[in-house]
Length: 101
Image (cartoon, rainbow, N blue to C red):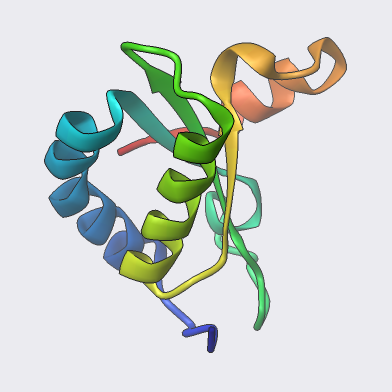
């Protein structure tokens, strides 16, 4: 998949437009952008790091399908991380920089 150079604002707009569908199809509760795209220092080829919470826990195949769908819809590779599974040593830094969709 070719990687576009997209601003954070454009990515947030795309994700906000997509969120109602993700809630209905995948039981997504929240999405948050973190990592290089959250602090606008993403380079060419950078992925999109997203924290996700669910109203119902998905199985592995559903989780992978969600990650693939978001990647296709925003035209950037996505690294989807379940918020409650954050490692304690990284949690504070990630939550400090996370931007809610």
